[in-house]
Image (cartoon, rainbow, N blue to C red):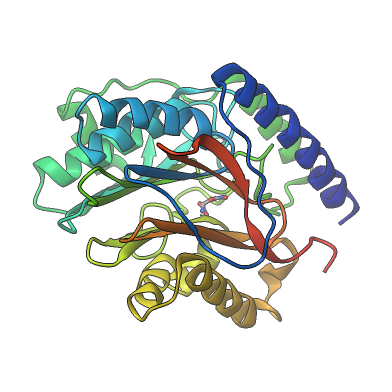
Length: 338
Ligand code: SD4
């Protein structure tokens, strides 16, 4: 746990650095919100994305929306930024590999008609979210996996490329020395990127893309490509998406449950909090508890948005007309010392 604390401290410092840098470069506002009550209401269109890499992703998605592109296209272009960035070690190119040194990617996307597409255990394709969009648009299915997903991607014109960067290979070889599986959620405040978009008409779309838990078993698929777990939306109600230990999110059908609670009248903050509490209650005596972190973001049809995480350190990027692109800290249940 000592290492873990050290890591969290460094991650927190890293966060400051990264968000300050991004804020300056992009002239974005940085709003830090630690209040425990009150959902925020944004103006439409509204984009919310997990973690610091949400800032450049939001920026790109915003530009796409303003250029008249659909929510789906905006998401694919937006989260495509961290997917292509080798410095982001938790998504796409440069993501941490599994324990066999293979980078395997998961992604899904969903539109306001409840159409969805997903890929899981996909290798050698830099933009799994774009392949997920093709699954939605060009197949009768919701998810393609492994070699089938790769074959489909190539048929759709995607190029195969090596996604294991030198830096990730080096870290993997270091990890092999001890080979201890202890997923670290929050890699320099980057992790799975989930993005929720409300467009000018109030229609909702969502997407999620990740290289998954570092050093996972070969073949392991997390929550991120699973509709209902890593992402869910109902255009009449709202949308939710997850980051964190995928196994815990799958066990509780996390994002679907957040949307159902909003349907019953909970605000986005309240709904995220209730599901995090449920995950805690189901896991407090579980072997995963030592390293368990989960976080949700959510929006509802009226433009209220929020988020909540089990442990401290989670943040998300929000973009709307009124307040621009900014980072907000998530409320949380407990710190890493508990
Ligand atoms: C997974 N949910 O594969 C992803 C990883 C992640 O924050 O989000 N980490 O379990």
